[in-house]
Image (tube, rainbow, N blue to C red):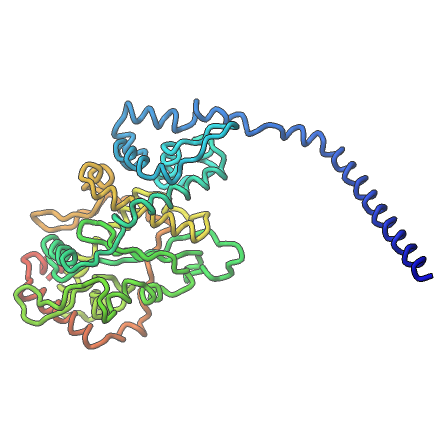
Length: 441
């Protein structure tokens, strides 16, 4: 009897399953019948105007015309001479080249690099570049990121590395002294907030004190406007001082092991008291053993006013390198509509390109002409602002906020003695004839 009941249940279960499947089949047939016209319309592989890329796309028209007919125009269009772009393509091609298929030809590495550089140089949206290059927006997004990653992968280790030998640091310090009349300086550091679109489900993680979504970038400049160190990616919610306190450069400078091989303490020229090699920074950075910053702008003595002028004169180079980046790579002039990790990769690629282009004398004059940066009149020592200052301030590069007054006096005695020694030297052994006039004394 139990077997009979079990057989009835199994039969009922089978019938119910068949009934449900029958209803599902009927519904699917109805849907397929309704969608049939739509499915027929989607048989096109891609939009017709995209198929004319090799005939009318920007790379196959204006790009090639400028390369042949207008050398200065090409250099402005791509931020580098044609020969330099060819070298860039040859270097990164193995990492971005795609396989040909029987369905279609792949986009060649030269066109991929041209597209990515054009995005970095203009900051245009992917939709705008899609109409110019006749490439789909999703494909453009992939191309830009692949090229940026490849640039940093190929050139980053050589052109975006922090020195780690005493000889190199001594060379940098000597250049700072000969060009900016300030010794024992191994770099000028500055920071900016890079605005981004709020990531999904990020909450207030990137929300900064100005009401924007941002990440923080710290850049240390060398005496020839090269980037010696970069730290980018700290979320904007953190106070500006936090970016420096968590920075690997700060930890390396303060480490007892001296991983960067910074030279030992050395007296300033003509003096006897040994002091450390230091960076120069503005009010956003705390005074410390390895960080020289100006005095607060109140109740200053004559010597302190002179020291502020001399320190700021040596620190100006860090402002200029960020000004160059905003002028040459205009993707920094609007909030990035990308994830923070991608913005970080783009920033690293741009700084790598910056050092790579400045390393070659021929491309340096095109990428960064002398009138672009600040310079001084050789007779009066008056500042002649660089043309990068003529542009509107980059909307996505905001200066760091100075430290809160409560933290200003929290300096070690060693840091105070270091700045006092510089202050004394500027008005004694290191005195220059024009400094009092420039300070209004």
